[in-house]
Amino acid sequence: MNKLFSFKQFTVNQDQCAMKIGTDGVLLGAWTSIKHHPESILDIGTGTGIIALQLAQRSDAEIIDAIEIDDSAFEQAVENFENSPWGDRLFCYHASLEEFTNEIDDNYDLIISNPPFYNDAFQSDDNARNTARFTDSLPFDILLKSVSKLLSSHGVFTVIIPFKEEENFINLAKEHNLFVNTICNVKGTPTSDIKRSLLEFSFTENEVIIEDLVIETTRHQYTDTYIELVKDFYLKM
Image 1: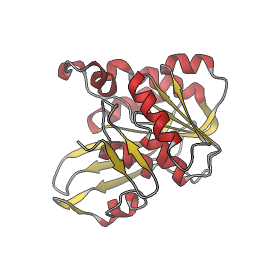
Image 2: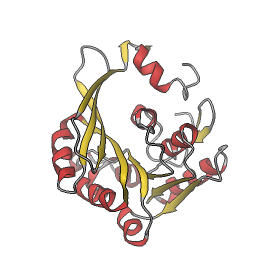
Image 3: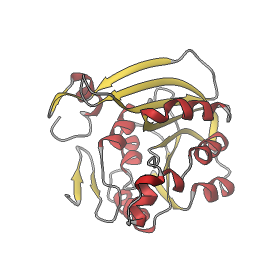
């Protein structure tokens, strides 16, 4: 696996991170709407820092904070932030989400998270990878409880999760007064099953917008919709 991942406007080191850069994170960072012009952004479980970096490129937000609990990933995110063109706007906290939520008084106009989502049936012997990938380390209810405290009254929360978790996650969010506004169902190819759900929430209950996104028509033949979404980041698009 390449330790260095180059995008159009920044480069990401990932040799210290258990979870390398993948489609999910880049997709979420590109799909998330900034039409409400967020002045402050929080990336929960930042890993390499990729999503926070994408939002720094896309937005004029003065504050872009990130949280990372893993020691090595935290150090890597800080390095990637400092080496980016937006180092003055990016800051990473080394803490658990619960610690951060209890200690911070600020609210954020946009909160974004690519949370761990595999259950413990598939855990490996790599503790760092387990922390990055498994819901035990950040249960959805803890995530949503914290988001409901940290999100500004007009703020937006976006997340990417497995499609099979969608209904449960949306119902859980309602318990914290977070209502789904947009759902984007992601499929690898036109004939494959829905793999991921991109979800946007706010404190306002609106009519739900449902979108579909297909990534490829055939192997490495990307759809126009996907290219349009990620072309500002990937070098070859």
